[in-house]
Length: 533
Image (cartoon, rainbow, N blue to C red):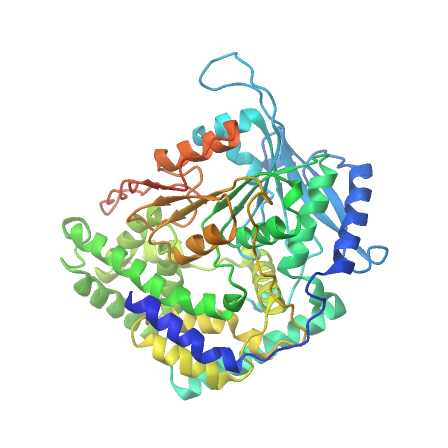
């Protein structure tokens, strides 16, 4: 509770410092709602011309791709349009539990990915996994790349060739000189976004992502949408539920962004740091329980000392000339999302401290061929979060709040600052976050999935959305922290999701599932196998 209270206090301190930037629409967004209706009618008439995917040689034949045209600016639906990439795998109609028995098709299940900046184009391939086969039998699985991502009118803020710049530091208590350097970089990045995207930049935000979903719904020929949002994708989903409740059939929110307008996005960023600190402690405790495998110490404190020794050693001499403290911290931050990464991350740290840097370099090296996709994802992340809401424009506010926070949550705090700091110097007018809500009878019953120790989207967000959407049901995985529960290793969670999507059946207002099994340690020399994400 101490961390939660700290974030609450920090949030109250900054409220008076947030600049009330001009809104780009009125509170109802009347012009944009009319524009969405116009765009949806056009999309319904046009449909989607599905065919081979651009990279079809690498994809199973069942998946097809197409495009949907949406307005860049919904207030001007007859103005410039952009194309969103959409993918689909048709319902198999084959019940995996009953052989040749066919099941009725229930329509399209549209997926909104995380990030912001991630693509959902490969979502239909999830139907190949055993955990998804019953859902894939009943639904066309549909994914898309949100505006700005991949081929969907891609954004860029800097030259991708300069995006991966080699080994980087990761100070948990940065010097004043280092802070000045990062402020300069944030200003340059914000300037690059404005210069490379021009006036179009202001139209990349979560409200437009929600409107885009309604146009995609219409293009698919669905009067009411069955929808799944994961991580960041739960936020445009919540906006959609508020803006278009009559267009919802069923909706799953998996790992929920806290939707309170006052928390979008600066206060949500603050809340992540203590949550990641807890999850980092969980990871270290797991390593300590398997000291016989990794030899990193029998307590979480000893494991931390080993991690800090590795970070200091990498600062003095990057592994392979490529992996520094920043890459190490980034890799272990990813392990805070997914516990199936714990075995091979622990093995890499153990091997490095024993003189073998190869596993560390293999896992944490930045590959130049991935730079274009990584830079695009970063650009969309920054643009959407900066456009969505006011941010503090004085670095002294960031410095004050995060210096305090880093005293109790040093692992992720400053990393989060540098990730979001371009928003302090953003050159585009901000949106005003919508007050997410649905009263009794306004929205069909919805399903919320959340892990109690999730770091990326802390559990309080699920509780908040549950309160805001009347008729919603919350399923909690207790004492677990994996980010993204749908179709994962917890059969209890998957059972509730299947019952809802296939039968419209929900448990009581709040159901609980025991945690999934912890990952098994991997002995040095073997290979850890986890779920891909």
